[in-house]
Length: 310
Image (tube, rainbow, N blue to C red; front, side, top):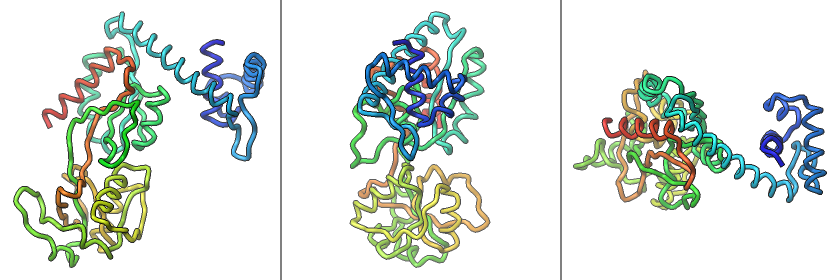
């Protein structure tokens, strides 16, 4: 059993298709098929079966896949440790970040890192927090910049969440919404405070369930014992803000997402009482007990410093 064989099985399992896996591995499809056959012969059982949705792992295949992920992660950690011997003269970082965080954070951090560590290669995975957690658990990412699970969710015990900052959520409505008259100016809040109970019969504009903004929105509404009427689900919070400004419904977004944003028709913002727990925690997420190279550590320290100065 070699690392190449482990990588072959892992890649085919992820792609669910021999042709796609072969392209990703830069090998010929017949050669990959023959290699899989040899692996199955050596193991003594089938690792894949065909299904309408492509190749599917058998029970033995799932066990092999889990082992392959673990072994490849150990091998990657070893390579990273060896690269450390070069004192940052060579190396590679692969980390995850959400699209929005990347848009304002990467321009601040990457130029500084490149100047200080010009020979370190950087790859970035941009995806939802759910996708990033999955990639961390499979060993495909060194670390991620994301938002921690909401208060009533069970954090993954295999992951470590280092909190950098907390940001409250706010409600966006149209400037002539009747909800504004029900909000109360309250000391310690940026906007007038609206009790979530008044949202019971209001149409909600929200993001998809795989996005952390949706997790926080659902949690806060559960705390208020509200079953929302969802009028629209989108992956773009800018779209939801513009629709809220037009009076199509209301939406809930983190306060840090609306700073310095300009719209033809601006939404009216309302704060949420802290008792509902409508906030999220920006964090650096790592796989527990995983090796962090000097390059990883240096990048993480730059990120920490950025948020301390923010």
